[in-house]
Amino acid sequence: MRVILLTHVFPRAADDPLGAFLLHLAHGFGERAQVFVIAPHAAGLLARETIDATPVARFRYADDAQETLAYTGIMHEQVARGMHGKILFARFVWAYFRAAMNAVRTHNAHMIHAQWWLPGGFVGALVSKFTNTPLVITTHGTDVEQLRRTRWAKHLARFAFGQARVITCGSNYLRAQLLELGVVDENRVRVMPMPVNPLFKDSSRRRRSLTPSENRKTRFEILTVARLTQQKSMDTLIDALAILRARGLDARLQIVGDGAQRAALQEQTRMKNLEACVEFLGMCPHNELPKLYAECDVFVLPSVREGMGLVLAEALLCGAPVIATNSGGVTDIVREGETGLLFPERDANALAEALEIYARDPEYAARLAENGRAFVSERFTPARVAAQFLQTYETVVRK
Image (tube, rainbow, N blue to C red):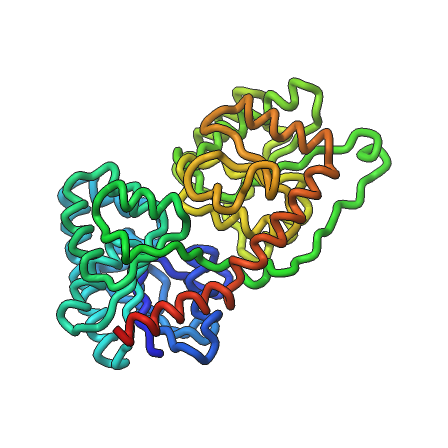
């Protein structure tokens, strides 16, 4: 099975966390499918390379200084900013289309698998129409949110989804959103998660060795991993930390990730006098995350309407108890009182209550973490997810 994978985000190196789940999906196929990746170029990247046995061709759409649409997480904002962004995006789509057409013809592809309905799904739909190559589109959350905010996007989405034989979503929440927006045929939409990094599989739970002073007053270590945007609601987590500390708990927070909200969050930390107990670690390579997950007392994802929340599965595989917002696709992973705890969106008091439950009863936290580890082990490994997608490809090609 020869598959052309279209994506505007793909790892720039083997240990790059951006779009890493797509590399893990390609690995999960083993010898059952050959994946050829088409992704955008950016300054410092090679036009053609092989990352962990997966061939990647990166198309150019401008000079190095202007190739800023991909790998930043703010493509939509750049396009909306003015005419320059719109012209750059038009050049991006044209270059994407040409690269995808060339890949389909060169490799005599059986399938096109496009990630995010825009730009990948739209480009994939055009190529599918011209070449009659079957198309599968996978949505990831940010692209569905775009449909909620932008009226004109629905027309493009209906074309893209209409050309796809199957549309996959990482969660039941995303499927419900697509149906509510009226842009897909219900019979074509399937819920299929993306895989976690195999290095998290069966990662042992390593507890910190406490000093005598820590044994007398044990710290409660909180971890979060996310892009620092408003949608991730990190300010809610910082507020909850302040509440916990006001109650006498020696709670500490590590924030892994970067983004536009970092400066504002650091200022919030200063205003609340939390600088000594909040650590901004920035972006971390994937191979450093298992240790962080394993050593924390709780992992928190406070996002609003998260599409899926794959980091929760990663944390659970490493044995970390988890807490997440009771919204979006995270409820497919975190089930209240079974695999973790949930709290209402942007409710710092409720989050503080959930955190205190774990802090006061670590055995309860460990029990939910073990339930969660078993749950995600059955559903999110690369081999399991790849088998689902391969079955979908084969069904689509036969039709």
